[in-house]
Amino acid sequence: MPSATLADTPLATLLHELVESQTMRRREQKKLDLMEEREKTITAEILKREKTGFTSGHYVVDIKRPEVPNVNDWAQLLTYIKDTGSVDLLEKRLLKSGAEARRKEGIVLPGVEFIEKPTLKVEVL
View (cartoon, rainbow, N blue to C red):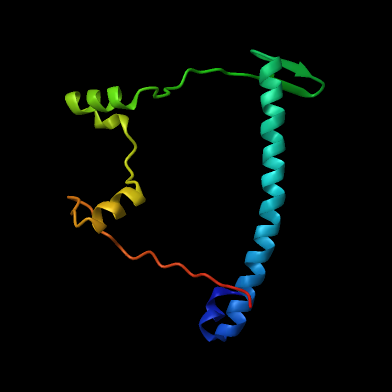
């Protein structure tokens, strides 16, 4: 349905189309999730068997094994960040549950505002 006509479409029709679309998407998502899980399993098996890469038929496989940071002691890291001001080591997002818990306690987080984020939930009767 072209978006230009949505304003003139009855809510019951929009709701029906929404539920149909969500149902189809969820069905397909389940299939995609199974495919992704299979891909991860196969990838893990290949990585277990091969260290650098290989060729097979029409395929050339290049395996990279870069070292990536993994925090094994958060207390030490957070102390370092506080002491040095190295906040660039952190991602810039706020944990929703932490912010909401403080809000319930009456704590105002500086620089944080709570904004409305509308959602629509449909239950099939």
